[in-house]
Structures are given as structure tokens and as C-alpha cells.
Length: 620
Image 1 (tube, helix red, strand yellow):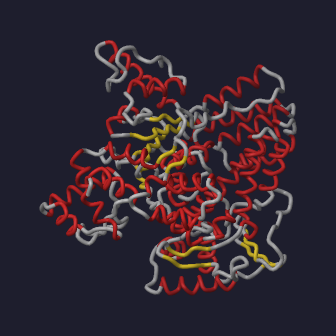
Image 2 (cartoon, rainbow, N blue to C red; image 1 turned 135 degrees about the vertical axis):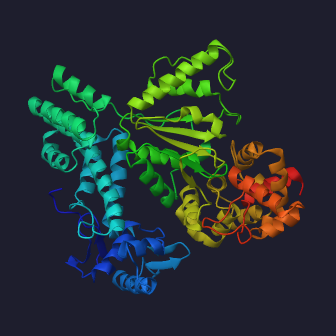
Image 3 (cartoon, rainbow, N blue to C red; image 1 turned 45 degrees about the vertical axis):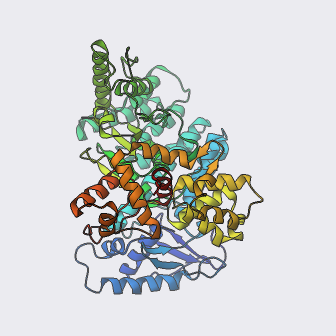
């Protein structure tokens, strides 16, 4: 944090910095950014680069209490000033700031914004560490940290909205600093990190990973007494402020320093999200979902006990989003991040006893042996088996009460499958993925995954077939992702298939997907089949819901259906039609508007590929 930041903007391009005060430089000269409200708008747009920012978010940032009647018109003036300052984007001369249904979107490249450059360097550093190249990792992480000039946006933090974004940026910087310091310690260079760690611990006294790195750097530098004093200060602070003891990992580090020399040690790393492997369709690099990922990180990273349900149809990318969040939340859950699938490979629900036994094995819960008897029974059998399951459940609750971990319960079929697994006390958080809404669980935070936006879907497709091939026929690429209904699994399978069939023009493949009778046949790549995944979701539906879905799928072909049309197609009364449609919404088979609207005014939709499968099964 003492070396000058590395500027990467090309000559003639404006370079923006958020990792410190908001600044803009052109060829080394700082530019005036206008009055405070204009800077708040610019800071909010830059905090969410290449992502639509709703007008309401901008309004709250500028006028948090009582926006004037002219707020929207004033925002347009501020955005216009930002367009003038930014100039056109890239070589194509496109507008930098565009307005759409999701709000204002700012287009900006990595070399023009320090936070984007910071993220790229941090990812490269972690990848180098994963390959065992510690020297390269330390260099890349240090280069990222050189961009950090102080508390992000420290001149605009009196705005609650900007302060929230700034807090997230600072948390990212702290995590990268911890990564860099631990890497330097492993390389045998602890002294280079000592002073910076001390300064950061003074500003963030309850951040345990910083403390641990500071202890380690002191210990490895031969300053054992100071290292032990750091722990003792932390223990007293935790008791005084929170009434808690340091985590088991921190206590273990302290004990190791009492009894050992200078051998490099750090707290036991948090367990990665483990368990049965994710389906092949979730193995590609994570793409899109910036709003949902941000919301998930905010809720789970707030430090309180939380249960979050991420819902969406089969193939919507729920598991990929959950695992991405689990990796990014490593520093918030020092006692581990574990993932357990709640279904078997054939789609049937696992018993509570099986799930508890796996959680016990992953987390080292005492008495975690699988109970005898018929584990396919919901409670693990009768008599002694039920007692064994109850003992496992008690042990699991006790473990959660004493630890701060993130538990990912993946692909949950219904509420009953997880009720006994949720923490009743302590600081564990649970992230649930499910096709249905699991309306019977409360209180929980809910995130429903919509279809990918066109831009996100095209980005995913381009990662698989190559950006050059995508640019060669962008119109056909757009037809492909839209024929996939924006379903991540379908887009990914299309990309996997086209990556093998290099001779196949995108336009010809788009024609195949446009054909309703052939689309599902085309969405197969090796052993990954979209039809198979949709069929699994179809089996979750009750017989009556399947019949209703088959009738409604025919209405959805022209873009959606209203309640009046549903009533006519189902041949029933209005109240019965409302109950039928809402039952499918609860099951995740029908989508409804995100905002409040009356049942008659709402436009409901059946995802395209699910509708095609319903036609196949019901012959509608």
C-alpha cells in the first residue's frame, strides 16, 4: 500500500479510481468531476460496471431521505455529464452509458477502472497459488494491492448507498491483502507483511484472518512474545465485545506457537464446498448473475445467522451460483463451507439419516456413523434406527451451535427434507438450492433465478465456442441463446456441442433450435442432456400440475398468458385457475412478474424448453 498505483489506461483514455477517493485521470492529469451529486451518480455507476443500475438505486444514493419531484430529470442531467466525461466505449464508438429496462448501464474496460484491474490481478494471483507458483502469486497479488490507495470512495461515504458499495470494495481489498500476506509467509518472507498487517488489524480489530496472518508473520520473524500478545489481546477483545472465544482454528494456531519453533503455520483452512460432484453442466466458468451473486454475498456475509433459498427450474444454474458464493465467502466462515446434495443421482430424495451422516463425516461431528437399518426411510427406520438418527441430529445441532460455517444443501426436493438440518442457534448459515420455492420454510431470504439476460447468455456461449466465432455471426448467436430460453444449462450444452462441431454454422444450428419438434433433440452433448434434466423437474410435479402445465404451455408460445386465457384453457372457474397457476409458480414451473401486480394484470410465462417438454408428454 506504499508504492504508487499502476495505471493501465491507454493514452487518451480516462482512467477511474474507486480504491481511494473517486478520481478520473486523462494522460496523468486529474479531471474535474463536477458537483457532489454528479460524483455520487458516477461513483454508483462505476461501483457496478457493465451491470444495469436501477434508477431507484441512483436516486437513493443521491437523495436518501426525500428525493425531489425532479429527481429523474436531474439524474438524466448527471448521466449526460458522465457520458461527456467518459466519451465513447472501445473502437466501435458505442455509448458509454445506456439506458434500458434494468436502469443505466456503464460500459467500461478493465484498463479503465481500478476495481476491474484489481479483480483481474487478484484472480490471476489465486490461480497461480493454486498451481503452486507462490512467487508468481505474491507478485500478482502485490500488484493488485498497489492499486489500493486507502478506504474506497472515502470522500463520498456520507451517502449510505455509496458507503455500502465502498464497504464491499474494502472487504475485497482486505481479503486480497490476507492472501498476499499468507503467501509471503509461505515463501519465508514474513517481515515484508508485518507492518501492513499491524496497521490493518488496528482498523479492523475483529477480523480474525488478519490477526492470524499478523501472528504468523511476527512468529516467523522471531518475535514470538509479540505474536502471543496479539492472540491474548484478541481473546480479551472478543470476550469484551462479543462474549465469545476465538475460533478453534485461531486457538490451534496459538497452541502451535506455544510449543513449536518457527515452522510456518496458519489456521486450518476453511473446508471448501465439498460433497458429491456437481452435474457436468455446472463445471464451466461461472458467468452472469451479478445482481443475484451480489445479493447472496450481502445476505450471507453480514455475520448473522441466515437461511437463504435460491430457487429456479432445473438447469437454471442454482448450484453454480451457490458454489461461487461459497468460494467467495471463505473469510466469513472460518469453520468451513460444506456442500451436500439432498437428492440421489436418480432424483429421489435422500433420507434425513443419510444427509446427517454425510454432514457428520464432512464436519467431524462426533457419533457420525451412518445409522443401521433402512436408511431409505425418512427417519432412518424404526426403533434403534430412529434413536440413532435422533442422536445424529442432536450432534449436528450442537456442532452448528459452536461453529461459524456455511452449509450448502443442494437440490432440495421439499421442505421436509431440510427442516431438521437448519441451525436452531449459533452462527452457521445455510444456503439451500431448490427447483420449487419451498414456501413452507420461514423465515428465509429468497432469491429466484430468472432466465439469463441476452448479454450474459452470449458471454457464456462465447466462453465455450470462442469470441471470434461469436463475433462472426452475432445475429445467429443471439437466436441460439434465445431459443434456449436463457436457460444456462441449455446455453452451455449448445456451446459444448458447437465446440465439437466446428464445421456447423451458427445460423444452421439456430434453425434447428427454432424448430419446436427438434430443439430438445439438439440439446445433448455427450452424457449431458437438457431433456433429462427437465424430465427430472417434471417428475417433481403432482399429476394435476403436469396436466395444467401441459395446457398452459400452449398459451405461452406467443410470449406469455394472462389469467383470463388460463381460465379458458383449463375450463375452470377463476379461483381454481388462480390456484392452479400459483401452484406452478410455487413449483418453479411458471414465472410471474417481479413487482406487485394484480392476478388479472399479470403476464405469466412457461420457460420455452419446459413448455416443449410438456407438449411431448401431454400431447397438447
